[in-house]
Amino acid sequence: ETGVTQTPRHLVMGMTNKKSLKCEQHLGHNAMYWYKQSAKKPLELMFVYNFKEQTENNSVPSRFSPECPNSSHLFLHLHTLQPEDSALYLCASSQDRGGEETQYFGPGTRLLVL
Amino acid sequence: GDSVTQMEGPVTLSEEAFLTINCTYTATGYPSLFWYVQYPGEGLQLLLKATKADDKGSNKGFEATYRKETTSFHLEKGSVQVSDSAVYFCALSEGFKTIFGAGTRLFVKA
Image (cartoon, rainbow over all chains, first blue to last red; front, side):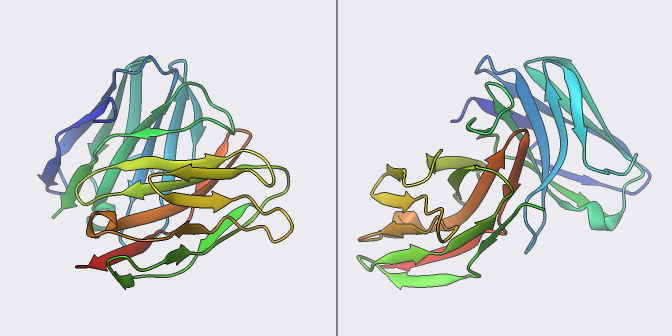
């Protein structure tokens, strides 16, 4: 138990569906992250929020829309996804942004797009 | 730009064997270096880290030394157990940027 929870753990959706992934951290951290983990590829950073403000968007397609209502919650809204978006989506948090900070990861949401 | 390269897996060892997983990096400045581990069905968790040259990180019998001269941060363990079977990720963090390697899968046989 890392203090970061993600729901749902598994999700199957069609290309026309709209769904949301939820992440919650109970660690009192100020920074939160979304990563995409695909087979045989390095972890890809998607979005970063620091004190609820988005500080990084790594050229992620607009069909992925993040939302951070407060420092403890992070959402990833999904719509009109493609099969190549099937992956494990990991949420992480850290006390602050900075080189020495350890990131704490949730268990991930396994997404399958049909 | 900055990058992390780790040895490709899978690595298969027998219990009590010696483990080395190589990691090299390129960076423009002085990054912090990390090893994270991912057990089946879980997210990544920090295994150890080092924040400056010649620092040694250690945890659960694993060790890695920050070698600036060879830009390396190799992970070692003297005697692996079946429970060490997992995917290991080397990462560097510099400023507001964190870069992960592709991961190395380790299988330990009883």
